[in-house]
Image (cartoon, rainbow, N blue to C red; front, side, top):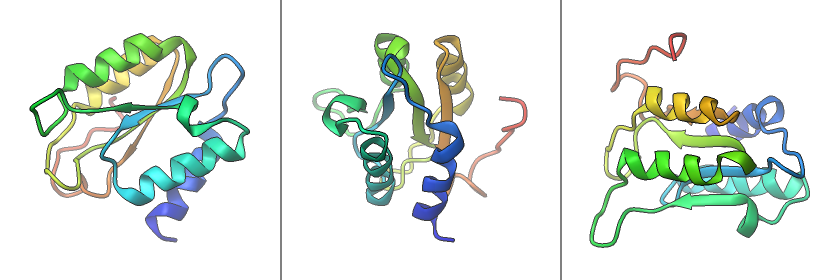
Length: 131
């Protein structure tokens, strides 16, 4: 399978939205096929992507996300979020995200955390079984 197909397959067991928890927190500048897969899954489950997808954007005048901005989005939307879906490494800038911290924040709010690690594999020391 290709990456987009695998993202769809990952969403089957991990994105189980309810009326109360239906949002997906993700970066605004996600890889285009990641964004497409998330939008497709949200629509498949009967939700409006404009309401269900929380896009985390860099601060004004900045080109990369701060880990704190991702954590703040989880804090703000945690009660209505089903899944936090982030890359391990941002495909365009090479920015590495705090996978462990994002996972902990998601779990603290009862959310699942999923990561596209296509650009992280071989570039980051991944300890997924520990996180």
